[in-house]
Length: 286
Image (cartoon, rainbow, N blue to C red; front, side, top):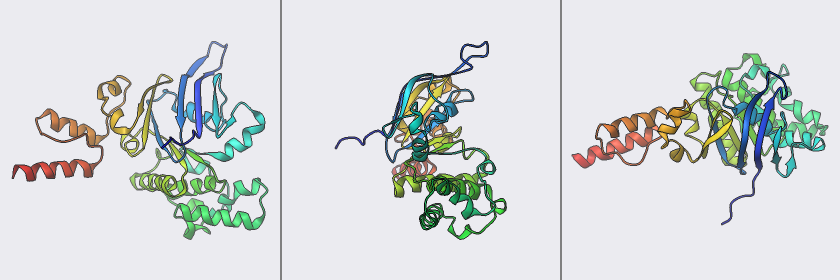
């Protein structure tokens, strides 16, 4: 079976801020990667690694200094394609309060479709579908300021969904949330990928969150240094340490036990996996 056609293609992308001035900064350098339909990609890296700069190229908030970004066949450098690109790739940012523009949840979700000039019945249909998809339909008449951080982010996600995107980029969208809010947003992201076939690009500092992705892309000093399934990337513990990244906590515990002579199986990334391995080992010993 052939691989799905690329949804987003990034080819030799370089981005320079303040080019030609004493304050010139090369934030991203010669980055090439492909994002496929319904793929969940975690983008990780330390501060200043270029994660957010790269993310803003995926829906043409920034344009390449060199190289190109193509979204569903549309070149981000084409000014005539700008609106369609931003409809197909939605962004959810770090602070949910900065993304909500209306005083009622359903009015906020309707904001994007209204700007498309859609008829009222289509807007109402999209608002209901989007709120149901993120589990917020019962809050449709609430005032956003009365919601929790995780609920606000889900409203922001619904606003993006109402535009019928093919990809959603979460630009550190869980950073300001408590553990429950983070879980709500991550569960919503997985559901959108699984049920709606929407690609997800999740930019995060959390290796635990990255471990849940289909693929992890690690950046350092504007370059891609690792790219692959989580188990492959997190086997590169030494390389990750060189670029100031760490393993997920469970993987660190697994590695510690192996160093101490515990005969565990393949690398565990999630608590349940490690618990199952330890339980099987105990049964084998007994």
